[in-house]
Amino acid sequence: MRKIITITAALSAVFAATATATATPPRVLRSEFIAYDTREAALSGDRHSIQRFTVVNPTIVSQRRDAVIYMQGFDTDPAYGDYNTYLHLENVGSAYTLLVNGKVLAEVEDDRTPADFILNDVLVQGRNTLTLELRESRTPQINNGTPQTAVSQFEGSRLYSQRKVRIDDFSARILPDSTGSYGVLTLDIIAANDFNFEERFSVGYDITSPSGKLLDYTVREVTIPGHSRDTIHITAPIYDAPKNPWGEYKDSAPLYRVVLYIKRGGKPEQYIPFNTAYGSVIFADGKLTRNGRETEFIPHRYVSQPDRTSARREIERLKSAGVNTLMPDYPQPEWFYDECDKAGMYVLDRAAIYAEDMRTIRSRGGTPSNDPELLGEYISRIESMYFRMRNHPSVAGFLLGGEAGNGYNMYKAYQHLKSLETQRPVLYDDARGEWNSDM
Image (cartoon, rainbow, N blue to C red; front, side):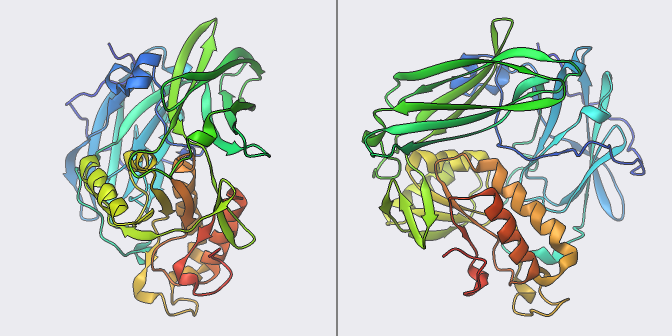
């Protein structure tokens, strides 16, 4: 029986949108992942067995002149204070205002990039109400571009929880050693303790080869003060890695399965699975290399597909045509990157920034990319794109946006993204020879 979140059909009246936002920033910027309760569920991807997880699919309850109101009720049990509760939203369909229990949590203009929010500060024990006010964007000038693929509204949206002692994020890659004779797994795990008091627990991981052989495992004990984080650095030799280079196969690519987990009182919990691969794209001195060998992108602009099966077929078709790199219109569902990982297809991930109509007008008040008042929205969209899928082997670089002209905001966006990503290239077609594009 699910313990914390239970959807009900009975919805209360629409809350007024006059409440102030919480003091804690609700937007969560980290890798998009699912924490499973058991190893079996993690390996099979069985989300139905997760106790604190439910699908979000709110219902229209009213319409105003300026917004359509969707609502959904959910319950929390007496143990909810031991957990962080998150809301993941995607395929909303328009800009939106997010409220929980009548309190405004976020104003979101970019509905194309999936977003996560932490709800702790506004939850109460028992009945809670999620409200979404779908409205016109306040930055329509940078939404002027490729139309969004038609999918079921709110598909992929969910409520989920993690214990306050948890794995908060991670980064992982397998690179050649200095001689190129074997691979080295470099794994950074960010462990967090959001209780008020110190916690002692263990953080573990294991890695399995593409053939299913267990290669390495480690459990590290950590002591973290209340409301603090610590990073556990792990390196391990992967001797068979040179035999399994990613992206050099006509069919499927060899992937290594990593599972992260927490142990408290000797009991494992919070299993987080993901795939990684041998090799990494590095851009330096004007050259693009993978595993020490110079490579090149053979790109194709990818028009987003409505479902996983259609995407898989399109990826296979393009790969057979000689394409090795996809440039999606905007950030895609997590399963798209999984399919590219499996196919050995590079991805240049693109931020959802388009301003096609005014792209050639560089004066202030012309292209939005040269309007400093929009800088915060540009940076927000760049960060939201970058943090989600940066760990996927297929993600080989980043695009600042689509057709949007150039100027102050794109200069700052390039500098900010380069401060986050030091190895993979940052590209922008509309730089047109200016310095804010690596290639």
